[in-house]
Length: 96
Image (cartoon, rainbow, N blue to C red; front, side, top):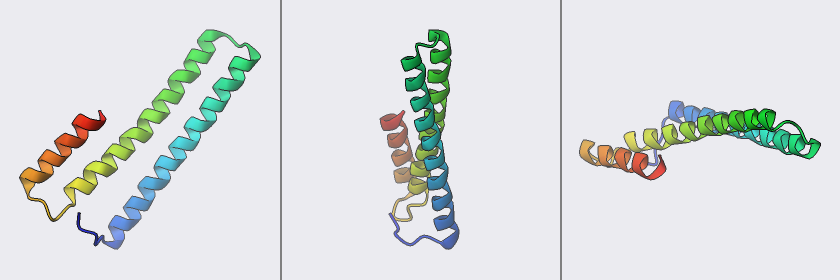
């Protein structure tokens, strides 16, 4: 991949990283909350609801990471269009 990135791309990467970290922190808090609910013996349905919320937050963080991978592949100036398309397909196949 071309190691030269523009200031705008560097800012976008930093924003993506911060968004992923924020979502992961949210997931971490939700998981700790689930652990506390289990320890308190709370209702299984309420716990299941929190599991669902944590999974959703983790899925959103994962989609941000996939977007980052795809954008990296799309900006790789050393690859032609066919190679870029193959790389994007590979990313989807491997990680989804």
